[in-house]
Image (cartoon, rainbow, N blue to C red; front, side, top):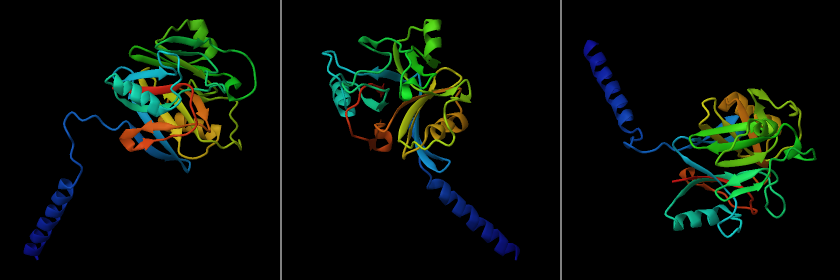
Length: 255
């Protein structure tokens, strides 16, 4: 019996070693894939994480001639001609029919609009709305009124609305019983002021469902809704290069 036990333990050990050998190899110096998929309350989401201190995150709308990019592949081609690679992109805020930003927008070429604090219909005006901004190694999401009061002067910014999470709490205007289901995308910034989470629903969800993803799963103090219905993702690291209607503002990560 003792000999049988020793043999059995040896077999188990070999099996365990074999399983370990079959695991995915780790390549030294290889960057982890920034995007992951998850399920929250029965709905699928894709969340892509970047660090403002180490990643080149930018806002895009038009080229040097003032022509809107409209599509991810147009932006990708221009960057490629400049010897740069677009590794991630997402629609970056609401826009008018002519693709001009609805709210404040700042890219490499300057400002396209001022901070919009007007009252009005639609999601953008479900106050408080907010501004997602990038400045050097820092990032933030600030309520629009506070953004003006604080005199923030970043390199890149896009205003949208509504805020989804405000100082750890859900936007008070989001209805848990809401019936408007859309594909939605948004952005959250961690407490450290540099870790940025871009999230997009893989199916139609309500505002409240989407907001709880940022509060309860991603766990960020502030999150901002970017858009719905037209939401799209460019993430070649997970074989996602979605196409569709022409876009206005675009958020991109470049190498």
